[in-house]
Image (cartoon, rainbow, N blue to C red; front, side, top):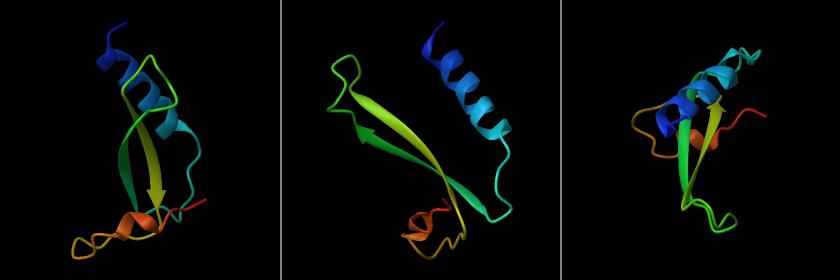
Amino acid sequence: MDFESVFKTRLGLSLAETTSVEIKAYSFNLFENAKNQNSKFGIELIGAGSFDSADADWACDEVC
């Protein structure tokens, strides 16, 4: 499978799981993956309890 297919499949599975009603927005966090020599970058999907387009830190309100 190519990257796009794998990504869409995993994203769909993640979002299909029961999610909290507290989640108001999602954020994709991209990072350099120093722990894995087979990939340069990683991606994390978080659910945030609030969203404010005027607040750059809105994604810090992560719902656990």
